[in-house]
Image 1 (cartoon, rainbow, N blue to C red):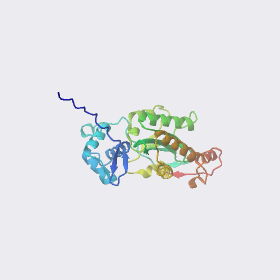
Image 2 (cartoon, rainbow, N blue to C red):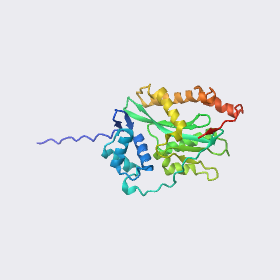
Image 3 (cartoon, rainbow, N blue to C red):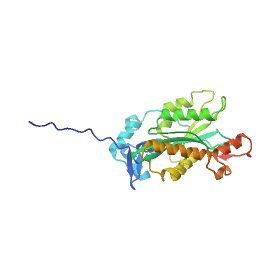
Image 4 (cartoon, rainbow, N blue to C red):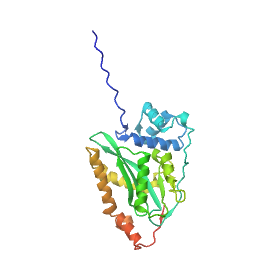
Length: 276
């Protein structure tokens, strides 16, 4: 009598793809790059050309099957291109910042847990004036609801009732383009949170949060190899506490972000203007 052959479940999709030089790029980062392409001059590309664009621009090896899967998830396939976002993009304006809580920049960075061969998310918000990390979320996922909750906590910790809300600036990641995030920005009609999204391929317009991500990459992620997610999260918590409370900045008159913020509140600083 013949024996039934046991069929194993299919392998799960890997959470990353490789670049030409072997670097692992998380799917979340790839999704962000795809959204950026869809917002730029490549908006008419199909999923195959989007994959090729990432190869040319980022040296990313993305096969057409995975490109199709990610584009379908993001609503970027041709038949869905006519989808309109509830809240259109507001482009950044030239601004002169003279105090805290006028302009916050935010972004998502991806860390790696070697013990699980997987990525984790760091979403963080920096105040352009005093360089304080006013809020952050670290976890194995980062959805629009996590971004909204983090922004709300930052507003509660930095603003008094009735204070004007800051302008927040981000790239074109899916969390920032979501209706959930747009609804949060406009839930207080009399004092809305103004959200600016930078054009594709202009990271210099989000230079302060990009600078912090370069610093944490250099000081932490490039030096540590994490065995567990908990170890990675604790490392990030400790570094951000160090950054806010004990790390001196040449651009802040050799003060820490917290010291600089406190000095401004105590009116111990001369007039400062930051053009962004």
